[in-house]
Length: 93
Image 1: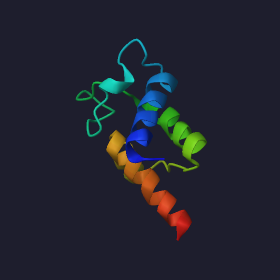
Image 2: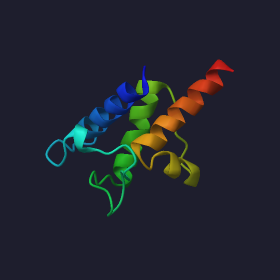
Image 3: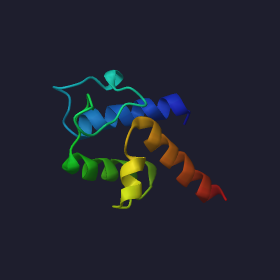
Image 4: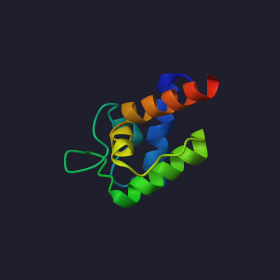
């Protein structure tokens, strides 16, 4: 899967699975914008973080640990893509 395709899929999954359809369109999510907190136009919360970890596990086979490091990995679309790419490269090694 190409990077842009991966980013678009993630955005669509986030909007659908975190029930944000009434708040934002998937294409309005910027790649480097925060997904959580007051500065976010997506407005995900801690329950959404659990849902996002489940989305990543189900769709990409990557387990997201609950730690400070994983919070950094879930910061934005770009950081999630970097996580997926990093974990997939480990599988190839």
